[in-house]
Structure formats: C-alpha cells, structure tokens
Image (cartoon, rainbow, N blue to C red; front, side, top):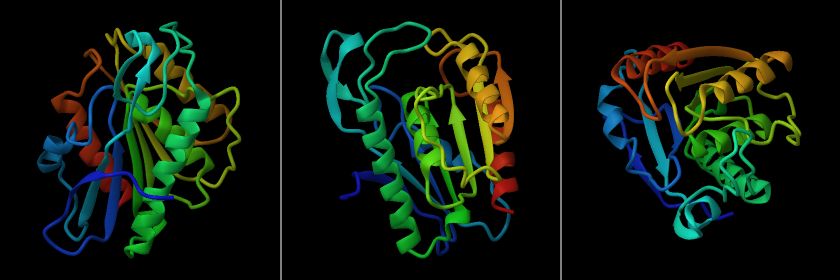
Amino acid sequence: MNVLPCVEVEPQEQANAAVIWLHGLGADGHDFEPIVPHIQLPQGVHARFVFPHAPKIPVTINGGMTMPAWYDILEMSIARSVDEAQLRQSARHALALVEREIERGIAPERIVLAGFSQGGAVAYEAALTCPHQLAGVMCLSTYLATHESIESNGVNKETPFLIQHGTQDPVVPVQLGAHARDWLQKNDYRVTYQTYPMAHQVCGPQINDVSAWLSSVFK
C-alpha cells in the first residue's frame, strides 16, 4: 500500500521514536503541526511527528461537499452512522505509516498512534487491529465508531491509551469519549481518561498533559 502524503517534523537528532497523528474532518496534516514545539519530551527521546493528509471525499452530513475526510459521516446522531469500509481503509493507511516507521528503524514499541475527532476514530480502529504492540494510543475529542463490529486482536492490551475530551464539546459529545473508555476498560485495555472545560478543540493544559503522557510512554 502506498503511504499517504504527510507533514513530517523531524527532531534535531536522529529519530528514535515516532508519533503518527491524524487530523479531524475538513482539516489537513498541518492542523497539529504548530503543537510540536510545545511538547516537551525527556532528554534522549527524539520523536519524529508524522501528520498524514486525509484524501478528499464527499461528506454526506456536509451536503455532499468534497473535503479532507477519513470516512463519510452519514448522519449527525449521537451514535454517528459512518461508512465503516472507508474508516477501515483509513486505518490500513495509518498502519502502513506504522510499517514505514518500522522500516525507518523505529521499533513499534516506540511508536504512538494519535488522532483528533475523525482521526481518533481511525486511530482506535488501527490500534485495536495492529499486529504490533505500540508505545501508546492517544485519542482526542473522538469516539469508537466501530465498537459493535471491530475485530480487536488484543495485541495492544498492555499499551497505554490516553483519552482526552472537552466537557462542552458540541460536535462529539463527551459521552462518546466516556463510552470509548468504558468499552476499552471492559475489554481489559489500559486507559487514562482526562476531560477539560472546552469545546471541540485543544487547550494549553491538555498539551501539558500530552507532554507528560508521551514522556511516560517513551521513558
């Protein structure tokens, strides 16, 4: 599988870790690039940040408008009806980026999969079906879209999952973040769950918590 085009932020020294971070609906790989300088990692951890661009497809909830999207969203119910075939295809693209990092010399246990909103739903699917044990999985303002159909292989049951969500999120209600937490815990995954008084966004205290969590998984 060809890898998606990406924005890549290289560390000052040779990379020995990687974070693959998927953006949300309508954004692109540049969306979270400005956060990288604000993430503080321990001495000796040199992380490459990889921000792939989603393909442009028609999105039903936006009147069929073509925009960057990891999958089509069919309706804006709290349960969120999505095109699961497209979501799984995007998860395969994410896993292809994991394989590329391994080929570049980064061990899988030094790779974090991350995603915001739509990108987080893809990160869940990719991590729960990944053939490698990863360093961690970071899911921001998102939901487990395929909880009823996913065929989790259990490889990442010892991998830390970080779920962060805004309590005032009007786009992806905080209940969906909590539902993903509950599903993971019920299925014996390791979860840290954090909420912030914010909407569908990222805030300063959250970035500090991301730095601390990445430091712990890359220690």
